[in-house]
Length: 274
Image 1: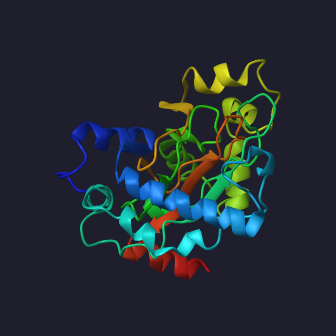
Image 2: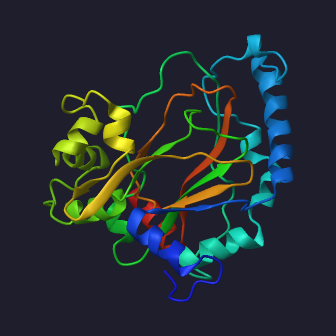
Image 3: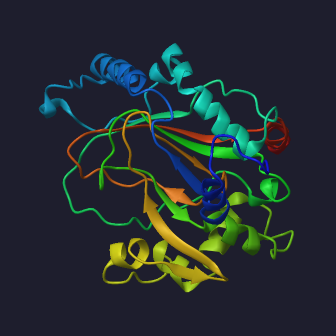
């Protein structure tokens, strides 16, 4: 990462290095986010019969929105501030603008009591690809308001640092695949085993995993629920451990997730792995 950031503060850069993420409020225009929302609701009505003004029509949809993913209006996400943040984290001239801003996720409210999930904790990029230089980012863009317990993605603060330490000790055989590395990581520490369902859960998962920190090998860990308003963004280390969470709020979750916004070198690594 550049030694003299221009958009992020030194404190924000340090937080990114230590915790694996930085939150940028009003990264792009609130009004542009509302325009994207309008397109999303139009597609939901046409493709799924879901009407914004009629909650009785709200129901889960089987996949991400398709037309919204490639809408030209998403180009407005790449503001000068967003460019500055990415330059601060990856370096100017090291990354091409993304063709799109990733998955278009609409998650509708469901009944039930919210809790920290045990399943589907994972990361999307090998830690080794970013050991010498950061070669990508995991980027969340808020298209709608996402409130507490409203389906926001959960991230494991500190996980990129712990994952790098852990994977640096694996044998070549143990490093042979993402699924194998994930399983070994989840079983490597009792706290992670409880988080990911490999061991019995504590009586109160929210208190155990979100209200306090666990320090493993000198790295503080905590589950963070990503919440925000239209136009907010979260920039994460590409190897951050994360998972989805149920929406027990009052409104649908409208978020975009770019799982791997890669540098030129990161794209080369992706092509070589395919």
